[in-house]
Image (cartoon, rainbow, N blue to C red):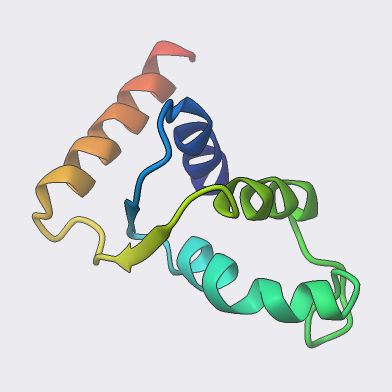
Length: 99
């Protein structure tokens, strides 16, 4: 879900300009800023020699990320960060509406 949210957000951008992506997911931030380099070198295997989960999403996010200058910021979830709280609200609302 977190990967898809970032992917769809990047797809919705109409102009190329510097972007700040704020996430409460260390999985997303560390995955795209650190781990992905090793995954690509190791043919999409983790350090434990297992296949990277969500490989297709990571590839798509990597490809989209190359189109923009992105600063990745991590914030603690449910800590009062206004935009993060709003994103959480919208995600939960969408889940409720699709049940």
